[in-house]
Amino acid sequence: MRRSIILTGLLLSVIIAGAQVGGNSTYSFLNLSNSARVASLGSNFTGIQDYDLGLAVSNPSMLTPEYSGQLAFSFVDYFSDINYGFASYSRDFENIGTWAATMQYIDYGRFEYANVGGDREGEFTGSELAATFGWGRSLTPLFNVGANLKLIYSGLESYSSYGVAVDVAGTYYDKEKDLSASLIFKNAGLEVAKNYEGERSPVPFEIQAAVSKKLEHLPFRYSIILTHLENWQMRYFDPYDPTNRVDPITGDVNEKTTMAKVGDELLRHVVVGGELTPAKFLSLRVSYNYQRRQEMKIYDAKGMIGWSWGIGLQISRFRFSYARSAFHVAGSPNYITISTNLNEW
Image 1: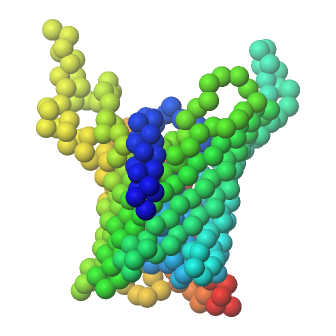
Image 2: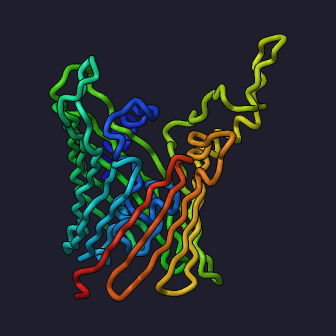
Image 3: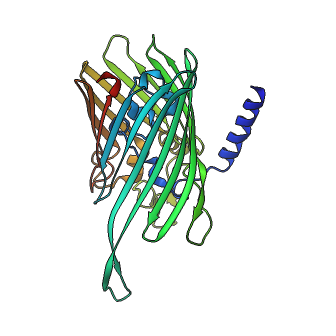
């Protein structure tokens, strides 16, 4: 046990030291929200434990024997003609743990070749895949651990790349208080091989944490998600921000105050969401992602950018979820997830 703890500590130290800022990595599709319920809560990860396989795909420490036999499908109508989703199945094996096999994909659509003169000479496609093998197990009645192994393929025209990544997560869950808290180290890995020249790119590593609590006297659950804990500096100077005006006489930039900068930086790491369950078969969800709003808004037309909302329905043996996230005034993706438990048929 002592050796395992030391080895884990050294591994995490190496991972954190090699963490990269967003935009410098490959396989970015791994950071997309797949489950409609996760998307409605504003992130790509959650700490809710109520035996929904769509949540366990992003958080393997949620996997327990109650997930055995679950089958889930998700589809996302993304921007332009891009779409992505996953198919997942879970099974429990006594004394070993609960396993989940997931195939995640993204299809970028069809593109046209054109030479320097603008003459079209055909078409090509682009897509990426990740085969994920998840495992989860209870160490104590209150604490679970889990891990994902991801085998990744990326292909654009004749260029291809292969990579591997792992997630390591832990969850505290108090069933009596309906309180759960999770910590995850996501996408620690590397690009293994590719068929074109250049340095190998890092995988989009991230540390996230989440806490979820259902209120005792109201059918409402709140969630707080902390993102990019490996990198405090998420904000940047935006020359189009009206508060960053340039003095016409001195040429100095009138930036935000120090307190405003600290508050702005802190909120970029926080996503808040809520889920109201007025009936056993119905759930209404909403969330706010401050970072998404700051990075994607247009100052003259902010609208609902950063907000996400959705609905969940339990009909017979099926669980349906729909969500819509406001990314930009140009459009908002639609998410659909359907799941069932084959053991109930």
